[in-house]
Each structure stands twice: as structure tokens, then as C-alpha cells.
Amino acid sequence: MFAQSIHKASCLTILLLLCGFFASSCSQDDHSVHLSFKYTPGESYVYEMADDVTYETTEQDGAVTRVLHQQKQKSEIKVLEPDSVQNIYNLLVSFVVVADTFVYPDNFEGKKEKTSEELIGRVDKYTLSMRHDGEIVYAKGRNDSATEYYESAYKTRQPVFPDKEIQPGYKWKHTIYLSIPDNEPIPVVIKYKFTGFGKVDEYQCAIIEYFSQFEKSSDMTATKWNEKNQFREWSAHYKTQSEGKLYFAFRKGIVAKTVATISMETEYDIVEKDGTASKFFRKTIDEERLHLVEIKTDSVSLSNSKIFY
Image (cartoon, rainbow, N blue to C red):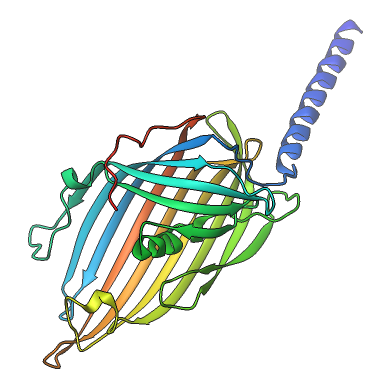
């Protein structure tokens, strides 16, 4: 009788433990969260960033050249005084190069990029205005080229969250408009999916997958880019695709980690001064990892670096 009672008690304990396990699992999987940025004025969020970029160029005769560019940067988001009337964050975003390597094929005959020594210490800065849901309403780099690069490379990876609680499995879309100099704004649809929860360091995170792509064509003949070459005709067609996974620390309201792949394809049609026509194709694949490493209240980490304007 006593053994039978022990057996029943053990079974009851196991049953309760199993119920507790499944309940906690279900509560985690079914947990609803309202995702939004919660930046604090005066704080700076420091990230380590690694890029592996492959440049593949196909010439008119079909010859293919591949160059690998590996770079590590430290990125810092400094939160300035917000616009309380419009409920907008004002941000200063900095990228400083801390390591850089180019790998060229043995038979490479083109113009080589800057050496690593020249690039290390380089800083790029951007001024941003962002809503609490993540939408960037203003972006400005040191010049038009820098602004265009940020618009095409980073704005398409910025999360824009729905204004409600969501659960794992939820999908949504958001349309942004890229501001390209001398062109009409380009609409880009970004697709998101909330896939579940995970932990990055001490942060409990919502995991968001995203995908976007856009195309545009440009007549480069009368632009400043053709001042040196003086091509009779020069047209370009661009196709950019971004996809990745973002880990959002929803209690703190910041990005803890991202893994992204950006593919950029460019096709050029050129007519030389003498009437010779040529075509070449360039594909760039950028594999990027970003990880939060520090939160500071009064950042001076970039103040002693070389700034290139």
C-alpha cells in the first residue's frame, strides 16, 4: 500500500513537471510582444561589425575577376535629444574601420583599391531621424554618394515594427522610399516574419527574418561620374536584394545582433568616344554580422580617430 502511494505520488510529480514544462514552452511560443525602439538620450550603443564582400566582374569577352574584401568595423549609435513633438529619435551613427584586407587574384590587372593602412581608422558618419517603430524618416551622409549608399545598403535592413502586439509566426510588410540623388524616390517593399524567441548574451530577443529587393536604371552620361571617362553613352541597371535575421532585445528596445546578406548586381552599357560599344556586369555579395558589445552613457570612442570627409 505504501509503495503504491509512493508510485502514485511519483507519477503525479512527473505529470505536474511535464505540465509545467509544456506550459512554459507554450507560453514562450505564444508570448505576444509589442516591438518598439526605446532609445535613451545620452546613451550610445556600440556594435562590432564584420563584412565579407565579394566583387565579381564579368567583362565583354566573358572573363571573370573576383576580389574579396574583408573588413571589421566598430559601429556606434549615439542618441541625441529627441523631437518630442513628432515623437522622433535623432541619432548620430558612426562607422570606424578597425581591420581591412583585400585579396586579389594572381592575374589581376585592374586598379587596386586603397591599402589597408589607408583604410584603417577611417570614419563615416550619418545623421538619422527615426520613429519609435524603427522607420527612418531622414538620413544624411557626408555627401550625396554616402547618403545614397546608406539608403540602398542600410535603410532596406532597418526593421519597421507593427503598432500592436504580435506572436511568433506573424508576417507583415512595409514600404519604404529610397531617396536617390537626381532620381525620384524608389519604393521598396520589405517583408518581415517573427519566427520566435532566442537569447543573445543577457538579452531575451525576438527573432525577425526579413527580405527586400529593388531595381533601378540610370542614364550616367550627363552625370559627374562621367566627367573623367567622357563616354558618349553610359547607362546602368541596378538590382539589390537584402535578406537576413535580426535579434531584437524587446525589453531594452534595441538591436542585439544581426546576420545579413546583401546582393547587388549592376549591368553597364557603354559607348566609347570612338563609337565602340561594350558591356560588363558586376555582382557584389556582402555578408555582414553585427553584435552589440557595449552600452555607454557618454561616448568618446570615435573622437580620436581619423575622420574622412
